[in-house]
Image (cartoon, rainbow, N blue to C red; front, side, top):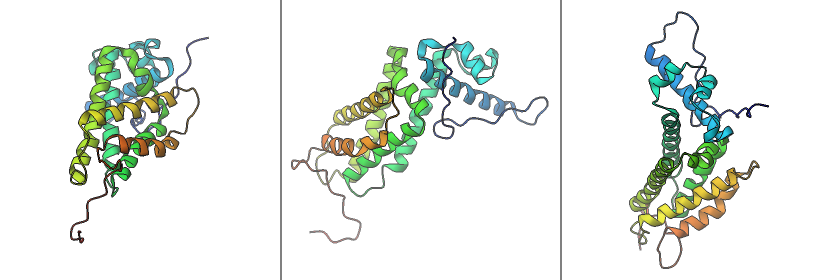
Length: 238
């Protein structure tokens, strides 16, 4: 028996599967063709990483799964690692976009943290193949992958820290950035363990408990309570 056939990503979450390129003469520009091929290679690398692990595939398998030539691959990427890292970078950028959209609308700190946690888990749940690739299998790439993971966690932590400073800093002293980094590490690890369990966990069911814990973890209010929302402009204050 050959290696297992990897599952497909959920198109439209992190990656979008391009339409098949027309055969023969067509009106697509070279840039459009290269962009479609590049997206297919990012998808193929992600699916192979999730399904076979880092050591289970190479450039040949990426090209075969993406239906592109090796020449097309090397036009876009220096090697297999460059392709995987480019896919991971996309994963992080999509995370930041979704978190910015979903986490910033609540009126109190617990609601903001809840929006962040729910958006984080929901994005993983909507595309479990991509989630497994970059939450579980990515670490096998070694030190460069761990460094990239640290940078991504610091960006996510900075996003939440900055949101607190903008909206709630007057209500209670905020925790240092290192506390936010620790909270994101914990969130990531719990989600990764769930994805690696071999089952199909309901990731969103983790949100209430994680929200309560994380919202307390990254606030230094002496009462131990998350800060209240600031009064709306024009509202009476005591």
